[in-house]
Each structure stands twice: as C-alpha cells, then as structure tokens.
Amino acid sequence: MPEDKTQAVTFGDDKSITTDVNGTVTRFVRSTDMAIVAGKLDTATKEWSVKETEFQTNLAESNRLLGEEKQGRIKAEAANEQVVKQYSDYDTIKGRVTELDKDVVTHKERVTVLETEISGRIRASLIAHGVKEEDIKDKTKEQLSGLEDAAKLFGGFKAGAANYDGNGGGGGNATDRDKMSGRQLIQLGLEQRSKK
Image (cartoon, rainbow, N blue to C red; front, top):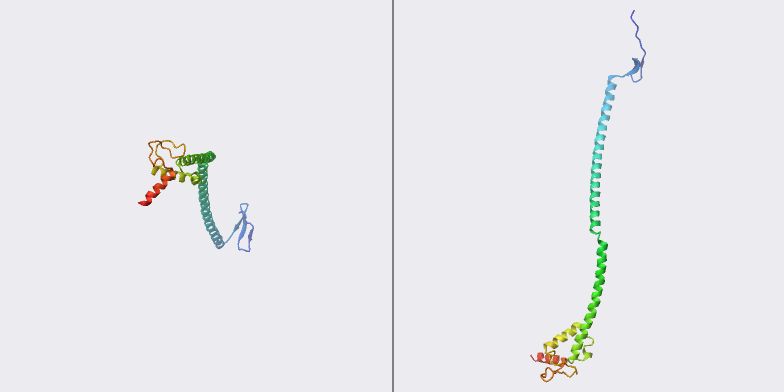
C-alpha cells in the first residue's frame, strides 16, 4: 500500500501558507504580494544607490578640500621657513645697526668739534685782517666762510708780511690796499659795486 504523506499546513490572515518542507518551516505568499515586496525592495535599493552616490560625492569633495588644506599648509610652512631663514640674521643686523648708530653719533660729535675749530680759525683769520671780534662773534661757520671768501675776492687776504701788530702790516712792498683791514676791504668792495 502506498505511503500516506500528509503534512500540516497553516493559513495566515495575510493569505499566506506556512508548512514544513524537509524539516524547515517555509512560508508561501501570493505572487502579487511578492511583486509588492519586490517593488519596495527595488525602490529601497534605488534610494540607497542615490544616497550612496551622494555620500561618495561628499566624500570626494571632502578629500579634495582636505588636499587643498594640506597644500595650503605646506605652502604656508614653506613661506614661514623662508621668512625665518631670511630674517635669521636679524639680530646680527640689528647689532650692526646699533653700532652704526653709535658711530654716527660719534662722527656727528667729531664734526661739531671740527666745525667749531674751523669757525675759530676763520674767526681768528678775519680778526687778524682787521674785522672786529664783536662783529663776528655770533656768526655761524657758513657765515664766517662767506665773509672769508668775500674778503679774498676783494683782495683782503693777499700774501704779504704777517700782521702781528694788528696795524695792517705788509712791510715796505705793501700797497695801500694791502695795508687795509679785512673790514675796510669789504667796505671798499661794496662801495665799488654800488657805483657800477
């Protein structure tokens, strides 16, 4: 006699059938329900694909920005190193500038001393040629030098005998003009100029 093969089948409220197939509980659903589930799966897969593409795009943009940031940082570090290298001898230069400033002050002081000395010599020369000391006591070096040049132009400083006594000197070969003081020569020159 043939063997009786019956098995238990359960019908669900969603019109599915559940039974035991080779020791495994299996659920069977209608093909229309399968199409709905497959459609939902297809929609979910497409949504996931869009989100994955968006994620990959955002990741690529983030990586690009990160690369630019790294390049910017590398350039900034290189520029910083160059500035540090360029100004590495700043302290040396600053020290040299300080030394030069001190030298300038020393030279200015020396120039002042020399100008005072030159002014004194010009003043003494003018006084020796008859200019009154009180007339030139407040004159600057430039003014004294101008007076000395004017006296030379008018012949007040010709070579001749020394004027040690302040009387115009000049010895026996001296002309009237050689015996005149520097002030008198300047006055004479101004008078002759005004007559022209």
